[in-house]
Length: 192
Image (cartoon, rainbow, N blue to C red):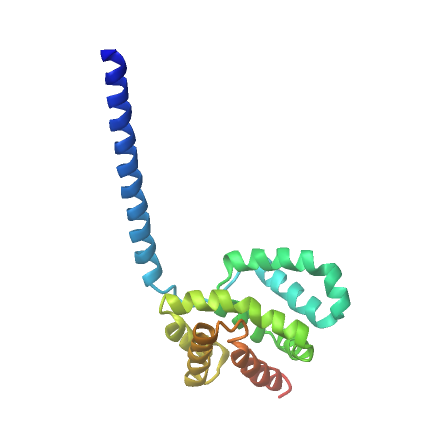
């Protein structure tokens, strides 16, 4: 009987230690997350050639395929998008598209289809809001604008307004004005 009582006591103490240890590790992970997310990554438009190929395939397929045809390619495009999403931050993704005249033209073509365009814009919202929550939109927006030779104040304003719309209205298309501005500026500059 005494032996069973000792086993119960040891088991109880072990469970308490495990509980507190898991609490400590969870808390330190949360602290680490706050520390790492509070620092903004530097905007870097350099992406791998493989990710560039994926982006080109996504944009060219969206531009050159009918809405019905996209239904048959959606699984493949979603897989490509997931791969890009893992490695390429949203402003670098947009910088790649709008620094390539052919892709900017494809974006103008995509814009003519509400289904395609809205889907594209909605896909940006989550990652742009992560940048907003980290406090990085303004800093990265300025570098993004500089890279694309666009008005930094206009870009930062569009990013901030998009974030406000997303928060206030839970608007999935909150950054539509930004993408529209990019298409207008970069597809017209490819004609000059």
